[in-house]
Amino acid sequence: MFAFDREGVYQAVNPVAQKIVAGHPQTFEVAFLNAQGKRRNYECAFVPIVVDAGGVGVFALVKDVTDRHQAQENQRILQRSLESSENAVVVVDVRESHMPVVFVNSAFTAITGYSREEVIGAPVKQLTGPEKLIQQADMAMYKAKQQGRDTYVVYSEDLDSKLSKRVELRNELQEAIKTGQLFLNYQPQVDRDGQLCGLEALVRWKHPKKGFISPADFIPVAEETGQIAHLGKWVITQACKDARRLLEMGLLKGRMAVNLSPLQFHRPGFLTVLRSILEDTGLAPEHLELELTEGILMKDSEGAIDILNVLNGMGVATAIDDFGTGFSSFSYLKDLPVDNIKIDRSFVDNVTTNEKDAAVCKGVITLAREMGLNVVAEGVETQEQFCYLKSHGCESFQGYYFARPMLFEDLVQWIGKTG
Image 1: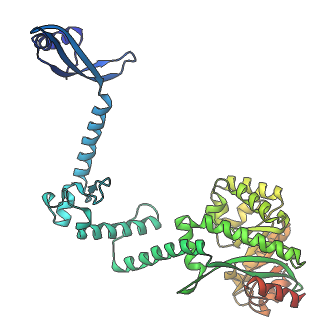
Image 2 (image 1 turned 120 degrees about the vertical axis):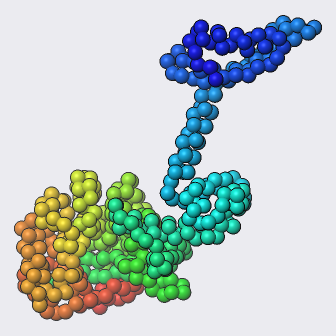
Image 3 (image 1 turned 90 degrees about the vertical axis):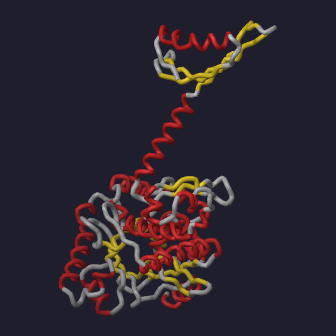
């Protein structure tokens, strides 16, 4: 390649020109600065036009090969980087059906014991040892990512077993969403007189072979994989449909509450999807309540407040679920346009026997009353808990003491019996 000034170009090209004149085709590359002052590479091909053994002209073809040069340089840089890596690297050609190996680095040969000659050109499926090793490394990396930044995890058989179960559960959950294995239970909320004042929709999964799978198992998997977006939309839609049915039967008192995940709440287009669900199901917004955890509100609190204000303007109520288990609860509560607070069951469990839990419950109730918010106590299982919370001003209650979560048909009968 030539990259000279005008005089230099003349001196370099002149010998080539003499060969062309003598009837010999010539190909060479030159580099020039273009009109924008950028260096460009050109491939020049000159073919002499010979008539009666004499040169009468030259056919010239000039091609800009700058991008090709850059691609080749990038490839060299990449190869040097992969070769110097301490991690085993295998590159395969996915365009071929058998996916032959086209590159391995020194670390790969050192770790696996395979030589380059053995693997280059061979189908990747033949590398059973490295394939398993890579799979195990991927599992360890996945676990490390779950634990946050600046950490590492060493692979173990126990890790393999746990992650394999999660992968299996993830795949089965996708099938469950498609085939209708999921359904909703509804747990009543009652007022101080024990009368129905609201409902909470709770998703359940009955696997055709494994039976009932706990939400504590499949909800975290759905959140990690992003399946929670589709699952959450289905839950809201079904809950709104059933709420509309209860209204038509004259049985719905209060609102239908649905839990939201952080992914749902902060997902672009969430409000648009919600409006569409309300329109399609025909449920008025004033009959819907969305429950959010403190974690949702702590993440991008300004954005959360904006969404809460829109929901408030729509007529959709909001509640903070599991209140008291997050961080800085009391400090940020004054800035949130929410309607209800749900005291976490972990405080309710020992409210009559543990002074600290009792203090938390009384503090939340007092604070909420001063701020004009309603308080719902979750996990009420005994008459003693109900009476204690009621005596300190709690207004709404939810738990096994009143009713367990139940199917829609059972809910209709329960409401009929309790009035």
